[in-house]
Length: 379
Image (cartoon, rainbow, N blue to C red; front, side, top):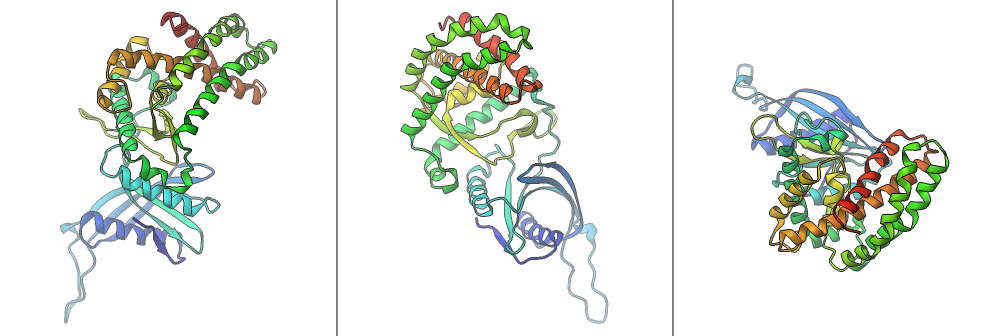
């Protein structure tokens, strides 16, 4: 695939011309657009996402001799929607195109992400558009709803995450040649992961102490000592995990309230990840540990891990034995929770102890880390 390059026109004209090509290919016949409107859905510094409402009809036939040409639009007239992602002029157009086209080839037809229709670039005005399938209403209602979501939907998302890991493991070499990803070689990735975990263990106590000293977070006082006691025993765990890390590319921002979509209501919902602006290269069980969050009952969480294992068993991503996989996962979960405490405590300090969201995450993760370290008898 390569982007359509259009000469400078009004924005709507350029978008319509691109859509005519896209929809003609979709319908396998020439079409024209007889109705066009758009609704802005979300806007960020880098891009704006809109839903386009379209009426699509066949092209007008040539005029008949001695009379007026016409067409019966009742024979074919479709109302449809398309999602348009418009990148702002200060974005790096070339890298965006390279990355989105490569992902479009890899994800197409896999029912992991919205179908990718194509990209269009207005060279003169530095406008770049990405067209994709409209999945409809997002039935995941917010960040906390992921941890309170029914197991049926959680199992569906875990299955899709496993599919992402398997697909990207297969396509790793293809992804590595995309220059804008700048992926480190595996040995360096292992070193980065280890340094990240060891840094969290070494520096988390200082972050916690700074917060305690403010006197504003009474709830933290009793936990600070218990948390400190679980840290040093985790260093051998990091050593053990480092020798058996299995990496894959994955979606860089799996935020439930933004980027996880249940695509259809009814008996057979379909689960998608959207907003593929970036990929990261991480240990798969570490990715799963962060993905599953911190508010679910342990038995349910381990059932989700078992579902993941079932989806990828026989691959190099997980141990052959389910019991071994569950033990290793527990280690990853503990180390990941310690890193999250370190990270969110640091962010709370940067925000001058005023950020309610980071405080709320700390309230949830810190006691969780202490609990699982003791209950799972990891330390």
